[in-house]
Amino acid sequence: MKHPFKLNAVWNGGRNSEGQIDAGGLQTVISIPREMGGPGTGTNPDEMLLGAAATCYLITLAAMLERSAIVPEELTLASEATVDVTNNVFTYERIEHKPRIVLQAGATAGELKTAERLAYKAEESCMISRAVAGNVQIQTQPVIEVAGEGGQARKES
Image 1 (spheres, rainbow, N blue to C red):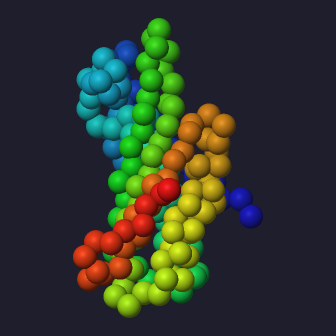
Image 2: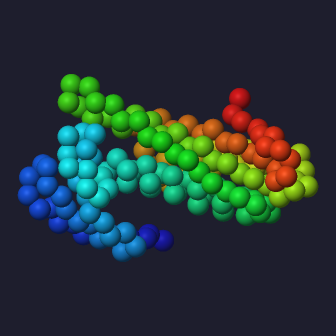
Image 3: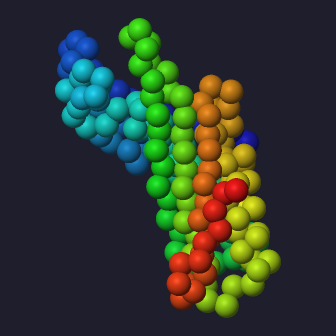
């Protein structure tokens, strides 16, 4: 089964202008980011690619945890992208995801290990990550904790 997704866009002028996009649940102003010499209004392709990769990863991780009967007390994500500009050529180099999974008090060592394994596996399973594979390096650095245990964490080796 195929699922079409549609986006309509309008651009108002030259390079340093702005536009609007409408993709169903996403309506926003777009422009070139200030860091790249643009006006920096609304969002931009760099933020949107990071947003797509991060939300895909987070939703995939939540679904995998659920299928493994692990209900985290807290699930958060901080993601960062690196774009290189060399000789006026823009290259989206890397995305780094830092999920934090807080398991409920009393979680077993097996649940900790499963949560950590799924934090890495979710990246391999995410549709957006697979779409950019070979072009953008994606790294995952999970922190797995148990609620009420003073912040003991497992991190990527």
